[in-house]
Image 1: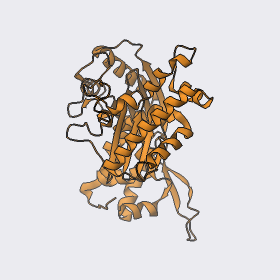
Image 2: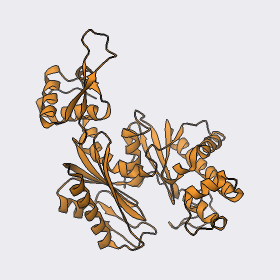
Image 3: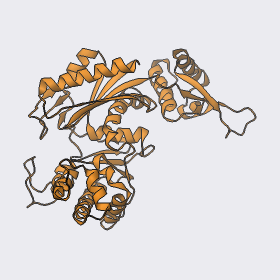
Image 4: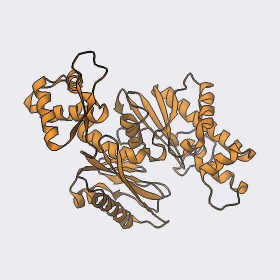
Length: 382
């Protein structure tokens, strides 16, 4: 964080202090001054402003201090700065209200029930946001939308996702911004997920990290040298549609042998349906059956492990990350599968720093809110 005491940079300085209070509290005034480089007077003015707004509370004293007079520690009040996050999946739309400390205040969800079109999706979206605003009773600073892709991020549009009711070229941002008169930020679901892990999750303090989402599809996102990799058209890290078998099955994208065909949890579920008496089977059911000794379920998990390991190996070779975070449905596979993935990856490259997402299947949702704070506060404090 670079110091800047100019009056013309009041917003920058304010965001720098707010970010540290949100992410590093409890923290003393001395530490805030040291980290920000702000003068004592500038910092005092900002602290006084936050106090008047009701943002700050005292959190005891710094017992680690060696001086006779222990510095008072400060932290933000819960719910002082809040935003809404929305995650649009193929089966449902979910929403939450979070504060800038990462506390989830409220969550709600609407299932599509296999019935959706352009108008209905926008209605679900705006109805959910209205419900969240009314029910949470907090001031909202912005709305973040996490969505399946492909997306046109410049125009705020959902393009033509596969298996999504034929919806195509749908404007998501303008209807929301018009109705609620709030800033709206649209991002790919995996880009949101990696932001959640970077600021509030397992990747805190790590500048080179990959998020690999494994569920019914395969997607990834990368932060390299502390920068989110987006690409010229917002379509970077589409590892699910990289070819691993040129003579393989035809993918819905039109190519053959895409990684996504093989390294997805739905494939494992469909392959073992005959092993279960119930009609609806989840990935968790497959995992539990494998643990109980079902040979076919165990075989499918081993296949999934190998394909996920291929994805990780490719990402390591391309990006040279410090950490790879596995997210979405794969997190339900448990520690045994994670250990197996690490072992398999080590046969291909010298890399084993692979962990499950802190937020599991909720990472894109939490990341949608994080995207608001990142855009409005965190990014403008660097």
